[in-house]
Length: 202
Image (cartoon, rainbow, N blue to C red; front, side, top):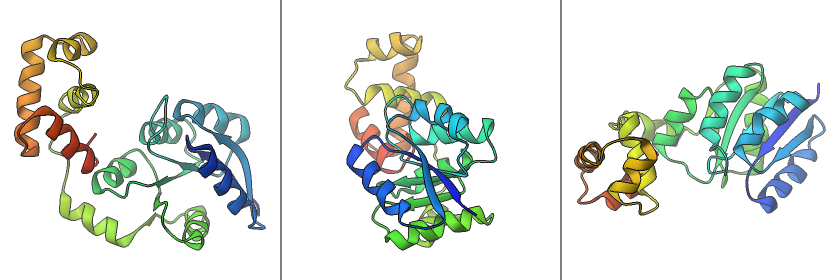
């Protein structure tokens, strides 16, 4: 049986190398390749892959959001997150989004090939060390709105700009920022953004 694959990564070189690597396997066929997260579902509908390999950081829609939409609309397509960022928070969010595999890009090629075959057999494939770190890290303490505010703040936006973008009052934005700073144990909004990002909470 041939396993049909969809690749989504915004770096052309990585995507091309990955495609060439996977095509070496007799039972693999790369049927679609996209550079944007908002093209994933469209490509999956057109090409009907068995497994989608999604990077996390992509334009249009990040890989975790794309995974959520894809698994909701095409549950028969198994999603494997393939990322540089082996962070506990990302793993937890990937599983919530419906991903059945999480592989870091510095894994051996054989590990990725094995992961694809295992998810096709109905298994979940997660790096054991990362799984242990995720359990140790616990849930993200940030609410959805706190996360939204920090995501907008990461560009250096002012309180007024954050408020305008999220349709909130400036006082409400200040409150969300204060709470997020307290929850991340940091001193200011940019430290809060950095810490939350490092833990995979954004």
